[in-house]
Image 1 (cartoon, rainbow, N blue to C red):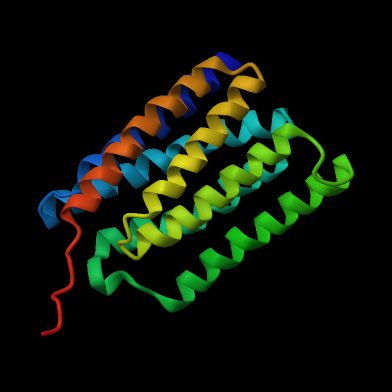
Image 2: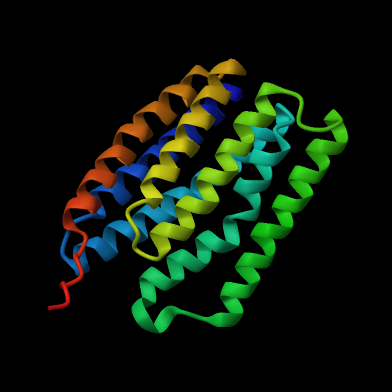
Length: 197
């Protein structure tokens, strides 16, 4: 069963990173379609990832994955609707679930393990910081968000390798290649503000 979950979760998350990376530097209508498909793949890949993370008692990483679903749905809705898609109440609800889940996940991990005293917890913190900061910066069209996604993929890949999940470790390393590509393209195509004369 773990093998099937690894294939399902890994392939859907890899498809997400490929689509998001390919969206960089594309015309707006093409970018929009690629991002919508990317969000859908990510959302459909959440259940196996949460199941795997919970089975290994990776509470922080599981909380990020499960609690981030409302934010992912909001991202999908915003990309689908364009500039009319922003909703302050929906943004608040998504943030509430994401940060509420994080508080519960980190709190339970600290309680169960008596603090941050395992390598898996340190790697999970890297996943958490990478996800939160990467998502925040990319939502604001800042290419530095890709750098935090590198931290997220590297930390999750190391965690999966450490816990004997080679398929997911490989998927994270492949995702890292597309994250690097996304960063390079986003950095090259970012609009440079005009200098004041």
